[in-house]
Image (cartoon, rainbow, N blue to C red; front, side, top):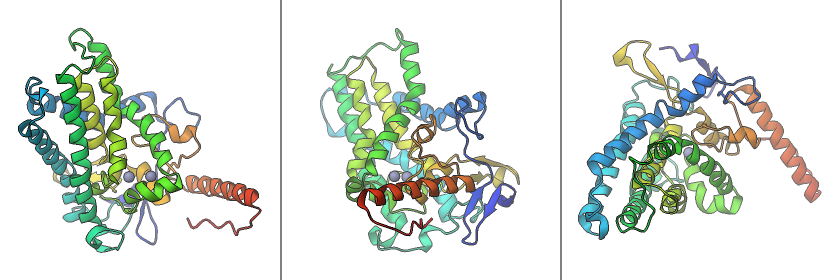
Length: 347
Ligand SMILES: [Zn+2]
Ligand SMILES: [Zn+2]
């Protein structure tokens, strides 16, 4: 498959898609998606896949609530092992195919280089892959499971307002489908706050050490950042809800983190035919890792970045607008301090 039919490559070998990142149809922009396309994007494929995972979880993995009334090693270990193995496979399949086997070389790869070829002191053992893997699987996953354990225990012991799914199917069903939208709103503001310099240096910087992202980057965070990402699941203890909602929220955050960190615009499926490929929908978050101060959103279900002036649509025009914003910010800072600067933005 020739990726240059779909985009361009610069002298460093970085791929840029031709198509601008689309915005929802109700936004005034030259690059809006159709209403049908936007609605489809809300559900398919990632949201539907993760809802499927949660249904499987509920019926196969979750122990009965009588057992979960008391903390015990057996059921906690079961939840941990299941989440660990599932996330290892979910992330590992993409990492193995695209970054270890390099099945499609650097075709459609946003950053022309591979992290494994660039050892760096920023990472544990000088290896981005190992650092990201260890932080994801031995820091973030245990935090996610610890929250899940406490929430299930609270529901089992009547410390929540557990409503019957059969009596409230629309209310509960709507929350499941809209989890992506709730997460997006929370993620945008929490993420924006994490770019406040003192907090960034202390916490969020660890995630941003990986400029050239790979799937293991998805949950490679400071423990506090992971805890903040999973924390909204506790809200289901405060409103009329069901444990499925909290469990799905945790699953959504854990499994959807991969999406922004695939690093390739299309995933080729050579086994199904020469032109078979799926769109990854991950350019927006890649641009966040590259430029830091754009695209704070996660899944793009609502255009928070557009509303707050931090959107980059991936085009040369997006670069120009970003540079313009940077100049304005610099001028404002210089005005406030009376300082002067050359105003050159390194990007
Ligand atoms: Zn990221
Ligand atoms: Zn960030």
